[in-house]
Length: 66
Length: 333
Image (tube, rainbow over all chains, first blue to last red; front, side, top):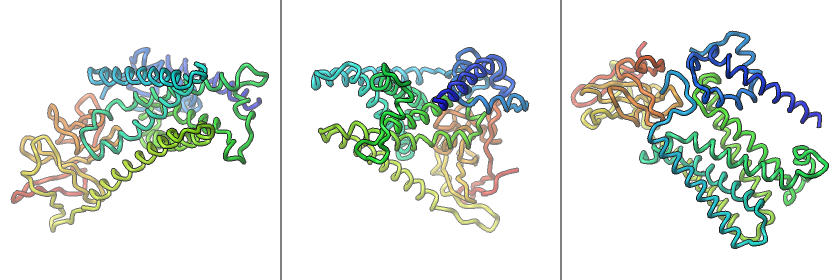
């Protein structure tokens, strides 16, 4: 049950981060995301939710794919 | 190719592809549940749906796995490759439907949390007949989720092509887990040998296709060319290369695609910068070498994509002499 609770917290935090990232952060990490529409931003939410520590680290370190 | 990301780069071919896919999935589910209801009238509607979604997902996975080697063996299958990621996402959605219905049917409405029950209701890991096959299915579903969630060029760039490719090669692990899931699950209670026969036939077909494609590729690489005195390798008769098409040679440890462009040779690295497609199996369209997999393009002279795109592949010096075409195996700096 504890493992399930940890997973729930991880994914909850991930979803919150993913929404903010899709709205504001994605275009800072990838030049091709600048001006991208809602469809693309919604599309990346599930993956970013699962891998949010990687994107948080990338965002904080100013990593950008040209 | 696109400069700004879009959710899906729609075109008429993709719309037709997805329309056929959608109709096919709906038709399969309709026929499967209809026939099952007639042949097994005592089976509940939930069970029919669980079986329908599960078999549809597994069947679609086999189609997906067959596309790669089929395209290596026969170019006419290339149109199936261009939108394969939509097949993958559809397959994940079907698998998710199967999983959700199964968890609800067998683990919900009790005292235990359904996800906890999934892991604890059957601890018989020491038994073949009663092995907790549901866990195998869950492991496969997790792999398929990561594949579906990263099926966009954004992930290719963010994770790096090598890491993205490694992630998507885990489809084979998912496939093995699903075969085990069915073998330890449905096959244990199924008296009719048809299911076992279909499973074995499908697995054998996929294995044989991959073996045939691998042997063809190995044969191509074995035909390496020797260097001439001035550092070039001979790549065959120039007149055998059609205008706008290429010959692929293996030299210097790399495959090089030698195109005939406006009557002159243009040699580029054979590996597309996008997802490793074989450029030499494509053609020159609108003055650009066009990858047969996803349409990425490169200028024959520089190997760079036309502006504003930034992809690049190496180019090689090539020349025609005495009716033969020669290429220098070291890329231009």
